[in-house]
Image (tube, rainbow, N blue to C red; front, side, top):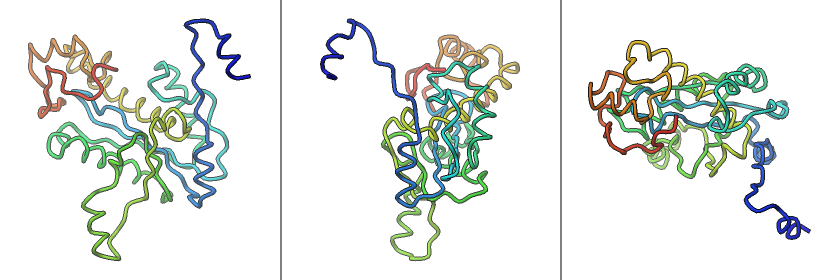
Length: 242
């Protein structure tokens, strides 16, 4: 049956991507992780501004996520902004943490992601039983702390982390966290833009858009740029995506 339907699909048509759901989260809760936190980052590949991490916590009492919740990259800005209050009312807790350009320069992007994630988690009133992290790399857990745990039984531990590739497309908590982080960081860049109008941050949000690169070549970096990066080249991880 499925093969026949696929064969009859018009050439060039695309299957509509599945919407995020709580299927993964409910499975994890049945495993004993009652308070579950979805986490996602934005701004990792930008040239200017902070890297920001959003968190959304749910428990078993939280119903399905508000209609329209998607990975933030798949939503128009106005749609993302409309979702923010609905997400905040829906979930058990939420937060957005940031690491500044200076901190990124001082400790590197991975440690800065961890710092932003820890700051976001600190905004929650509940201690998470598990953090669900988009991707295949656990940048939240501190390797030094894990090494200490191996030597000292009572060393403080962060929350356990489960990574999942494309969790932002599959899991409602992670998609919702990406929306909160994106809206918050975009607003920060728009607020900064009038004082640094040549860089065009109100449009590119600090990413490597052509007008941003042209301004960097002409004026050099501001105090909001990541000065340790190859600012006028292609040394970013997310390119020019706003």
